[in-house]
Image (cartoon, rainbow, N blue to C red; front, side):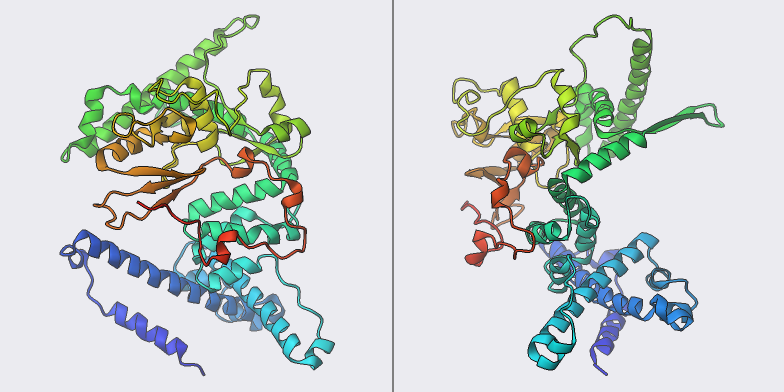
Length: 502
């Protein structure tokens, strides 16, 4: 019997025996504290990886063919998920995700082991058919090698879904290596969004089916609570929902608060309470605004054309998809795609063509300090929201920032030298010394020395999917069944594009 499980048990006993309390970490300085958190995180991820592999074996021994002799049944549980949940004391969702990732790794390993055996033993090769490599093999291997964590792998698998529509197994196999590489430094929520965007990019038929399904499942419910308050809930398809969100954002925007209230947020003693009070005030104002909007809408003359100055939803689509009807578009501030067919009716409301490249019409150089409305629309299309790597603020909450400061650096009011930042990040960048550098079409965030003494550049990614801005020539896409094409930087031994020097 291997001695690995006893080693794990010994590690667990050593950790349990440690007397750890909040006071353990108080004496540490910032750098030491963060180092401890990172080391504990590495340990947790390694434990989860081993746990997923072990759980996969539990699932194998609990398979339906074993019946009452299966491991789960013999221990008094209905299935593997219930058994794992009872051991880990986790939620049902977490237990199912752990089992799923473990089985994904096990199936990948089993197919690879059988293929290796067929190559090494001619007798096995003659008597055993070639194994079917699962389409998620690249993801299973990435977890086994520690490239991505168990949680990120589960998020990727969930975001991609199962083969179907235009996203058959061959298409998913071709897309996985690049997706895994993109997600190696992302947290689980960002990885799930990236996987959903990948699925939408290759499965236009699925986008159409989802849009129809969403329209079918819309609802709005209202009821009276026992205390007399009227409560409601709704679910709307993306375009209708984002219109409602645009109205809500206008009614709750931080700029609607007076300057004195906003300054109070920085008070060390009362800042949290003032922020909570301000939030309650904004939400109360939004409720009153909703009622006023409903009154105005209910009383409007149906024969009258409404004012053009109204909350709107901006839809982004590239010219190629619009001309051919093939592909998808996106709603500004929303993570999912929409069919091209749903975009055409909106063109009657008005549209603004935006061309990236020479930028001559939209570049103002040193003639103007402030970005124009058309420039901001172009930045909205390009950036898709706040460009800070950890921020998810929508475009409506952002401001245009000169990456080369107007006074200090002689910055230019050109598209290439501007990015979108939410108000909070914009102030933080200026006040704390964060810098943004551009190399070609890529932007890098440079932390101040107090945050990172090495000032290691951090990649800033647009929230707008890349294929919306730059349609891919179909002839350049990998053929079904063809091996994935490695990235150019991989040949140089790099995991990501070279970072700019500071």
